[in-house]
Image (tube, rainbow, N blue to C red):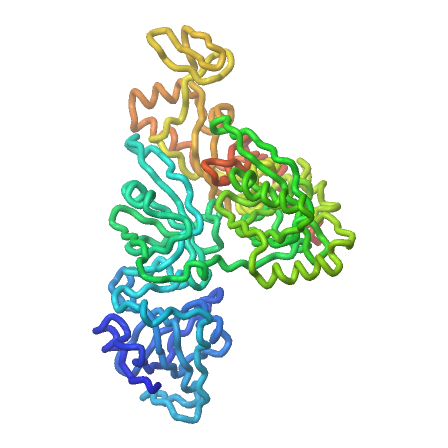
Length: 580
């Protein structure tokens, strides 16, 4: 079918492609290729417009698209940034002329160039469900500089509604979900306050919704369970609506990039999430661990899988997954079957050499209809069942022992090596860092028993009750438990400071700090500010903890000393000598 030619000016005026047969001819300028993403400026001779290529188009033309090429844009979505500048998200294009066929002034192309077309996508929407209003765009095109976006995606994981206190002490709600679109791109979305109350009950796993009027922000890799560089935040002004049109939700599945078991060593104790698939060879007995937050029991179960690399690894399932999926796998194994297990968004830890932990929001598939699963089945039936298999962590167990880590580190390296799961031993590292900031509005200290340092509650004049030992004391002491940011040349870190270390850093006891705070807030803030930007040698502990179904890393300063510059000089000289 012959397409009609439109212009950038007409595109800006209409706010979208006027018809599916229309196309825009323009030249490529200011071409930027960064980490697989392609941005450019389109110029049709009269108007200019910023453009971003979708991940699929960038993949198809990443190595071929050059500066000054003439292209025909046949499909896309028009957005605006915060300064109301138009940005075209290109989802389909054709290269109609190379740089040698473009006139330097007019930009007119000649017919000599060979036309390259965007390959047709594997899945296309039926014509009957296309809507001319608020066209949804792929998740892969989202970034913080695009506004007015809308996505259509399926909820694949829904977390619990959690309660937290605002700065004013008012209880608020928050919930987090994971969604995936037709391209298989997933992203994490968090609903805050009114949005959590409004949409939590409406959102259901497996259903498709249209999401709009949210904010796109960089993802925190410490807590984010997807591999997306961004995450979504929704508030009271956001809009979510269930799709009432016919959509094949089964086609919306998270795209998995499987890692071979013998390659897991490269991801040990890293923040990187990986996907794993293997044949189940054994299922351990069900067990549990006690949560430190509320002393409740958290179910766990270890499943051993193998793949064609002739290696095995233990995968830990948690919570309901341990009870339901773990029991299903156990029954299949007892019946003489060896099911295929695929798990997304796993963390690899150094516990017992190499182990894998499936998070609360990991996707678990049993005997999935995937090419990798079919290949594994053929391998296991032909040779794997009788082959000699070795654990992936064989010979690496000593790597997880305390003291195996290097003594001196920096903040960035410590964050990179942080334990990924609660059952991984804590990491200790010594860093030379400075206190960057202390929030003066935090509690900073607590009332404690003078005998056991446990928290006490003031019940009246001269009456302080300790719930730990059930005693009432005539007086109490204040002890520090502060939160502060430390910084070195490699990065910044939010950490806790306990009493003994805080007395050294702040230069006074908590009771004295309280007297200053009550008598003169200005002097109190100045005392805290005085403790910043002094360099210390700090011993920092990092431990992974499970909280509301999420794994988080907590950092605490367990020792602090003034820097010994003579020792540091000798240490650095020794490092230089060893390096050469």
